[in-house]
Length: 611
Image (cartoon, rainbow, N blue to C red; front, side):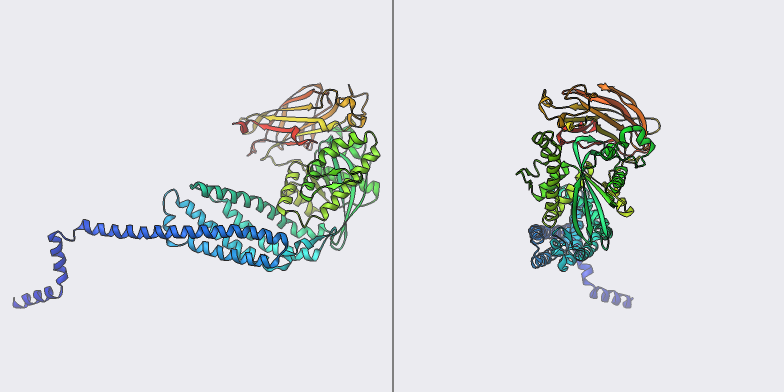
């Protein structure tokens, strides 16, 4: 008993805190609620410190972001001036800022902020942007800035030639950087819409910018392996530049008024003589049976080839024709029109013809498709000389301006011109042809049933330049879904002769036309409208209003309607029809159109855009 009492006393002697704590609880000092309150106070204090740290960090990130924006402007200036030293300095600044921002937004305070409901995704987006910025700075900008040839890119294009050695070095840097840009673009475009309004505004701009840039980078990356072939490394390449005039409409663009040979060898580009081939017979060309059935006159002469809507055939036939008549093998055909030329001159600056006429980015279409015909009247040779001179001056201007124009502006202009078929390219080389087809430059009739396009094309048979006044409006209704999953649309195409009353009576005959006795009056337009079904689809219930009518054909395996119709001043041809898409279609119907002389006279309205 004594022993047990001694052990108890010893235990109590060496553990006084246990009894002290118990006593405190019993006295009402350290109660459970008080303990919880203390813990909460500590948490709140830590949260306050994190909020303060987040605030300071946010201010620092904003300051760094301002430095980055300034650096971006300096980067553009350095590239434009070709200042290698400035580029290196700016790149170093951007690298430092990138890492500073990344370190800040991945701190514990930002991590806690990312857990906040609603706004946590915005924090995550900022963190992703910072990681992308570091990737771009370290793995794209730094290697590019380290390559001296990058700053000498202007030397790649000089005196109408491409320096293939310099181009090879530049290509190597771009090829290394391209995957970095593309993976960065993928990450940025995948970011969700931001909850914070200012962040959403900035994010939207960044996403739009990288979306456009990634398209350009993908095209450049795809082009790199083909540059030596395209630029005639070790051999001569012959390219045919065919200038269309939309004042005399053809399905694939316009009448091929001039044909210019451009030769390229080891990067040296030379422009040859411009000729006209419209009176040359092309009976030696073997056209498809469906082409001849729909357009019996297509085998008449070289000027009729663009009656066909698919440039993959038109370009091939043109190459055959030029080779036959001029005894020169053609490796590629590029078709352009005056609207495309106007877009080029908007970037490079205008040219002045020997008669003092200024042709630039504001008036080229009007000057080449309207005013010239009024100025020179019926003197066709003077017109041809003027057109050839302007084409030569514009080509020379472009060759000497390639290193000066904005690459982004040039890319956007080329893509827009490919989209509205004012620039179309056919290449003999299968690799190049496939590349241009993939990026929409080939002028090929769409063959993807999942992305339906109805073709609305025009061919003029007035033997005139009356097409300047052609106006075309197409409206597409909401779709009706059919039992098999296909969709049917009601489509109305209205073609109008928009010339003023009596205007054409006072014009040179070259403008109003020679096709008598088919013309009803001096101002009468004679047109072959061509409506083609989308891939895997069909056209039905074709109804026409106006003088003339359309017949049903099969062209390139697709439903097609074409025939002779007329429109005098103020008159309209109205075509009402139903378009049914393939059951495989995953997108709504779009309209592919012949590009007109005046862009403002061409319109398409989709019912769903009005909602």
